[in-house]
Length: 221
Image (cartoon, rainbow, N blue to C red):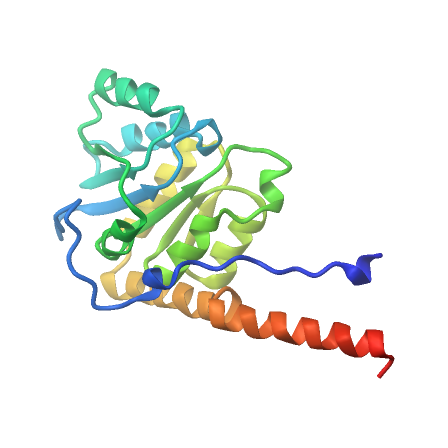
């Protein structure tokens, strides 16, 4: 029965919405370079071939660096490709603890989420989307479905179709070309959307209401 189904999303850790963070020890801030950060699993689902296509398309065209944090089944392949394609604009930082991510996100100009084209993936929202929105930084998505909807509906950034490296390059170039004030406004819009839709306090209040309503229905009130 559809009436028994309730949409209830996950939230990000509180650290991601914290402000006035200490500078990240992983990457030094460079105001002359547009920094795109990807954090998470380095696997087949994340479509790193298309991400590297975007990095290669923009190499030498704009001062953009792609910072990839995490590891996974594709880590060895990724290291080899970055080396073989001489992608000096791609930094592979390996795996780091969760507590290192909020300061890193705070120094990014954009945060990247990507997933391969897949009917199941289109119905999901990767957990990193909540963390990205909470951090108050602009978001770039090479992704379809619900995650793309959230990015665009929140006003936090730009999304392009899954698997299209050239489209990713185009939206990255578009975001990098915006004034800093406009990019900051996008990040803040994403944070406000997170607080309305995904913040732990708001979701727990919603959960309490759901339990109360279920109790009232069972008691016939």
